[in-house]
Structures are given as C-alpha cells and as structure tokens.
Amino acid sequence: MNSVNIILVDDHPIVRQGIRSLLEFNEHFNILGEADQSKSLFLLLNQGIPDVIILDISLPHESGIEICRKLQADEKYREIKCIILSMFMQEDFILNAIQAGAKSYLPKNTGRDELFAAIEAVMKGDEYFSPDIAAIIMKSFVRKAKQDNESDASLSKREIEILQLFSKGMPNQEIADKLFISIRTVESHKNHIMQKLGLKNSVDLVKYAIKAGLTEL
Image 1: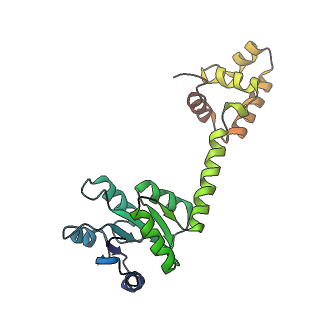
Image 2: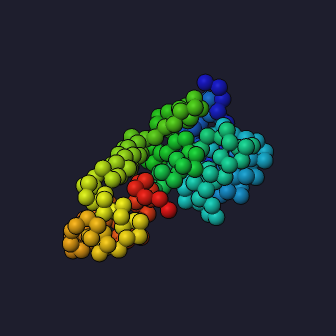
Image 3: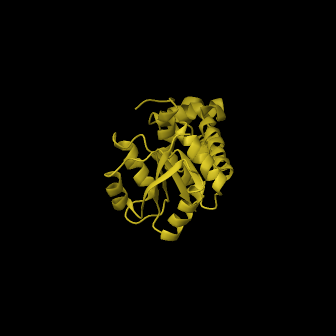
C-alpha cells in the first residue's frame, strides 16, 4: 500500500491523540495534521490535500456531515475520502452522512484493526461500514422497500375507484351516486384507504393519487 495522508478532525484533543496513536501503528499512514472544527480544517487544506479525513459529527459551527457535504461539492476536494467516526448510532445521522458523501461510518468504540480496514477499503474506492452500522443501513433499506411497495396494489379495486374519483374533485355524494353505493360506504372506504396508506387527511389522499399516477393535476 502507498502512503495514505490523513487529517483528523475532532474537537476533543484527547480523542485526536487516541486516533493518532492507533494510526501510528501503521507505517503507511501519514498524519498531515489535526483540526478541531471546519475553520481550522480548511486552513490545513490550504497547506495540503489529504487522501482521507477522519472526522466526528459533533463539531463547533459546522457538523462533520456538513463538512463532508461541503468537501464533496468542491471540485478541489472531491477526491478526499471522508470517514465518519462518531458516537451517534441513530439511523438519521448515518443516512445523512452517506448522502453527504461519507465513504465510511464507524462508531467511536471501533478498534485499530477495523479502522485500518476502513481506511484501506475507501482507498480502494470501496465503502466500509462496521457491522452494527451496516445492520442499521440494511434495516432502513428493507423498511423503505416495504413502504415503496405500499402502492395502489394494496388497495381494493373499489378503493382505487373511489380514490380516483375523489382526487378529481368529486364530493362524496356524487361519488356515491356514480357508483350506486351509499355516502356512508364512500366515507368508510376513504377512511380505510387513509389507514392502509398511513395518510392523515384528504389533501394527503389527493397527493398520493397524483404520485401513484391515479390522477393528474
């Protein structure tokens, strides 16, 4: 492996010192510098562009996720690989970091070998997530896939028919007359549709119908 130039970003000196100590076990890793926030990081970047930045999320002024997003948006820094090393294990933080361009996400209790593996992986152009993080990502993916499948196929033929008519602006009585059913039945179907789709009101019903291609604006 060629030498990997790294910058550490964390607002706690003792944390940076600990990470540095771990990295110094590997002769291929070269620490270009340390920063405690975005301002000091970008001052360092004026002196040299690293291959990898290992950064925390919770930082003064700008979060690690915001820094990562800013780096990815700038052509000069786009090739830098961001590795998030954070105590935050919530799904929102993880997914936001990935969307911001982070190539790896590790918990702060990560050991030396896993940190080395993450650096080596991102330098090869891969992504690396610890097992716990990968499990959270997978659960999120599965849940989203299930939600995406909750389309008009989960509605009965009659429910789709009522949804189409309602989304075209027909009042309940007119729908009832057209379908030869009672207005109470129309209202009951609408309530069932909202329950199935997790919708809250009539506006959401219309929005869903448009998104599902059941009607047009």
